[in-house]
Image (cartoon, rainbow, N blue to C red; front, side, top):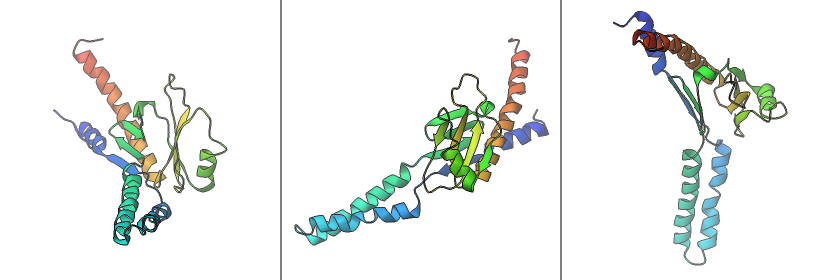
Length: 178
């Protein structure tokens, strides 16, 4: 039988956060310069071919920049930033950083042991302490456009992970396992 507490925990587990760290519009605008460059190179051969190839080249670069950008997700109790992932039970209290704090966290105050996913053109950041004694990184620094939402999602995942730990222990006791 499901209790109301289980229902709340289950609902919270279903909450997700997702963000793709795409380049800024200025970078995409700069990539469009490839169209006339490609056209100029191929104009002596065929100007129509040059326009088509140049436009396709610019479009391919823009699509690649968008689809290959790093992704940040919080799904259940798993936090992923780029290729790295960690269970929320090993995360400390997330700290939202904006403005000068974020610049300092990504620059002069960045510990060389810290794991970081930093993107230029993205002003906000979140610093998350790592509580796993076996992890050499003391914290993660992640660039984000919405530090408040990411910090809230990490905090929810931490709460869910701490709520799951006692239930998993009780389930082990009920089955006769130690």
